[in-house]
Structure formats: structure tokens, C-alpha cells
Amino acid sequence: MQMQARALSATQEAMANEAGRMSGLLEGDFVSPNEVERRTADRARKQAELLAANARLVRASLEVDDCILHAPFDGEIADRMLDPGGFARPGSPILTLVDRQKVRILVDVPESDFAAVAVETPVQLRLVALASQMPGRIARRAPAADPGTRTIHAEIDLDGTQ
Image (cartoon, rainbow, N blue to C red; front, top):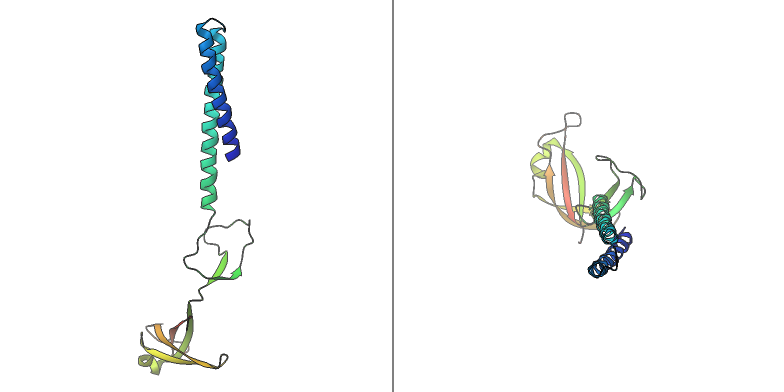
């Protein structure tokens, strides 16, 4: 569309120059007034086509901008539910993005340990798979126990850069 707009612009400019030369020839009675009017009308038509092409170009660029999706944070794609070029609808997931900077561990503790999992309580986790220990803190906890399991749901955030 940009190339089409450039071509129309060049054509319109050439027609404007030609109409100007024809107007000069009209003063010496070398061309008819009808010919000058026709050239001027052609120039106006090309100007309108140029404006329409520019409007289509702006519309197309806006439509492309509407198709670009920006993630709310930097991360890695864990799961892709839609292939490139597919049609996404509002509310339909297209991918799962993982934030590697923050690791969140979900735990359920007995309701008798409610006070032990207060928000901002420091914790030390022993990660068997990594054969290491990592510090963390209680980021959130449920306000009450699950009636079915009598456990409190808590979330521990680990710093992914440690």
C-alpha cells in the first residue's frame, strides 16, 4: 500500500506540473480551455486517489497495530494454544507465559498452623531435586481453612535469581 501511495503521489505531482504548463500555454492560445480544464480535473482526481490511498494505508496500519499483543511481563512461553496466523477471540487464551524471575510455590498446611503461615513470614525450603535450600517468604494465604480438607492454602514466593 505504501508503494501504491508513492506511485499515486508521483503521478499526481507530474499531472500538477503538466496542468501548470498547460495553463501557461492557454495564455498564448496554444491549447484550448477545455484541454486545460480536463488536465486540471485529472490532477484533482489523482489527488483524491492519493488521499484515499493514504487513508487506506493508515487504516491498514491501525488494523495491524490492533493485532499485536503485548505481554504484561517478560517471560518464556510454556504452552501455545494458537498457531501464528490463527484467529484469536476476546477471552480465548492463546498462550501460557511463565515469569522466570519469580517462582511461586503453593502449599497447604494444617489449619492448626494458621499462625505459622502469616503473610511475610520468612521460610526456608529444602528442594530435594536440586539438593539445595532456598529462602522465601509467605506472599499470601487463604483467610480460612478449606472445609473439605481442613487445610490453609498459602503461597510462597522465591526469588528466581538466587
